[in-house]
Length: 223
Image (cartoon, rainbow, N blue to C red; front, side, top):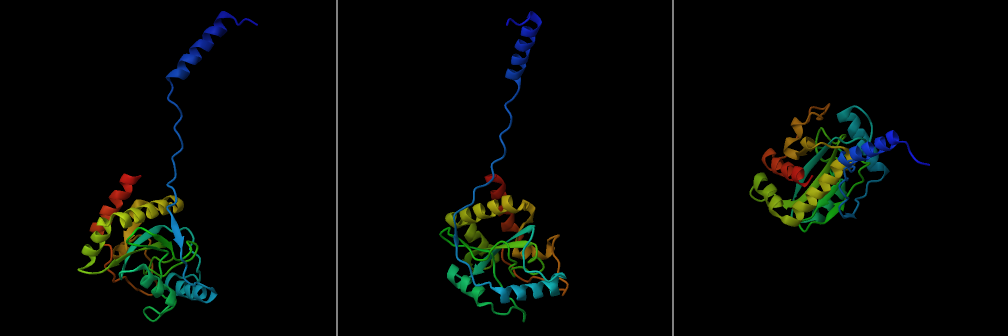
């Protein structure tokens, strides 16, 4: 059936307008999960109960599950191997006279191997005042000449730095953590999410603001 002249003109006009419109934007790509080796420490029912009791004392609610983390805390091990850090976490030795022992969710080795040490669904005792709202990322590095020196060694170690950045970027996408809430252990007391009912404060100096600023800049460039 032949179209009328006005209808044909309308179709021509619509086709011309469509050609001028920009193509619809593609949905933003989520950052891919880096390769992670699962090397979990023992974290059974007893340790979970210890974490719940710790949480009751310090945060007001007896919980061991980690829900909606808002902060990613950077650490370095103070030792020279991932195995020594893993053994320390696995030992569940009291810290400051309380159980459970300390741990972090991930350990990043100097050659770039990322190890998942504790499930993201479990609270780890890695930063006073933030364990109920944060994920801990340990990087293998001896303290050496001090905190600035140690963190800069990590930043200059290409494989380890790239792995740590890839891991943190993926965690940010997965958990919805803003870059301003990627902090060093030395910055924990100043976090808006900090809370400790016992009046405890962090005294660690790993990852000070100067080096964290560099880490954040690299995260933004990667994005």
